[in-house]
Length: 88
Image 1: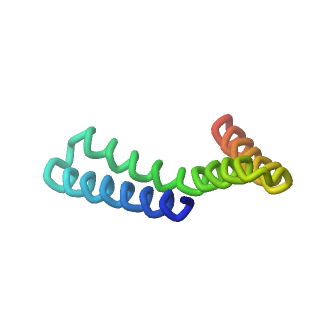
Image 2 (image 1 turned 30 degrees about the vertical axis):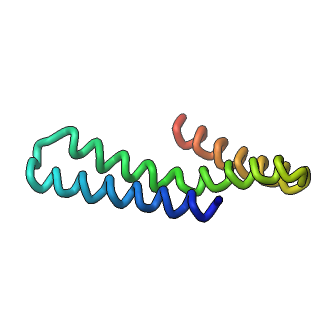
């Protein structure tokens, strides 16, 4: 499951980036094309966060409380660092 998340987000990010770059090449002043490129970058950056969320959900379903708590702690650190970066 986690592998599918990585592969899917990689394909999605690559497709969005290719579309956005091609659209920017054809229409350099297009705000839509620039937005698609930024969306591709956001998808690429959220891939590790998605992996942690999926891993935490799998640990909870499997009943592995220790691993679920550790993974939730890692997710908390990621969220906290994003919040601190956003508020600077």
